[in-house]
Image (cartoon, rainbow, N blue to C red):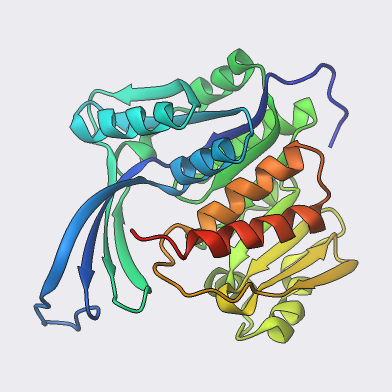
Length: 295
């Protein structure tokens, strides 16, 4: 990173996805050709970008969202949710052609879930527009990116952030190969065990195997965090220091959004001056509290 020439306006800026999640409660996920009976359904404002922005703001970070919604009730609901959480929405554009992103998630009685997303307007974020938004907002100490928007969007935003000296966090979800260009721009890569496996080619079953995959994912310039749910967190700081953080024993109500809680809180902590290990530890505790709440 380069040094910041002036103090940024925001602690955290999130560029990424906004989805309206339809959550169906059922005993188990249906098998192929099976029609399962559910108990209830509800809608929840989501998308990894939106979730992470809300969590960062709730943790006290001055936060702005850069994204795109459709020109319909779904989009209006997403916008109002961000605003209610005190997230600046100046840079959330309305797409007059493509509908808002949405997902359908089936939540099992044990708290685990499966989901399908339809990205909609999130796939049509304009690269030139978001670069202008970054500068108009006045930048941030930390930029959060995810893989629910096209890679050119992430590259463009990471370049803007790097030029200002901001820390660039990439939550590589859903997993996909990273371009060499984006790899060189990311300061902190956050993945769960599935994403770590897909990106490293190594099995990740526990903290020991997660430590083994850090070298495959890391570099001398980038820190890697692997979240393992009930197994805790493994952190590799620029391929040198490795930390293992214990999970917090809790009764799980739902794991939905836990990873986004972790990322948003960690970004807020980094923006507020915490080091990476302490930020990860605080975020781990926040995610543990998150999975206990009723969805």
